[in-house]
Image (cartoon, rainbow, N blue to C red; front, top):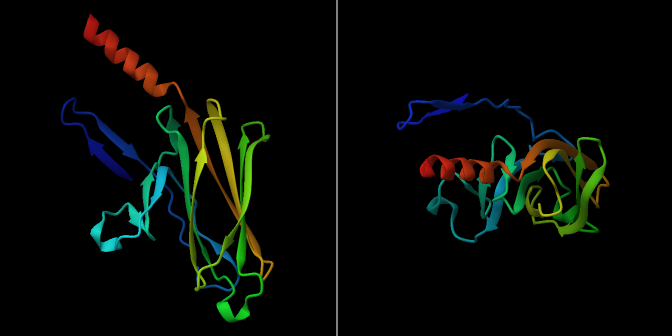
Length: 181
């Protein structure tokens, strides 16, 4: 559990997250946990020049509570793929990656698939900025699937998130009312 104390009002905010440890050295295609953030920006500078939000040449601005608001225009998706076929075993040299977003009724509301060229290693870092403009308030489930075209192995993981377009606007309105009275 992590927490922060607000020195102005004395209140404490905390966040509890389950940590799942996975053995990525096992055989077969593996997919890391899906990290959701406000956005993900690619940057080719050295990693040691940056804070903990920089990994694999990307700025990942995390949102651990998985709640997104009106100010989030995109949903940043970051994950890593392990145990891909190595360069001497390759024919297709690509990964087929797909994400689906389902609403709380299980209906697919957004879907995209694309082919990525594999790097010259058994591991790949993948980041996607998914537009949120077509989604309304609610709870969603994102399903990420990856298939190694050479081995035909496929893996998928899912993560839930919440979109509340009005939360910041309501808070801003409350502040305006508090100031005017």
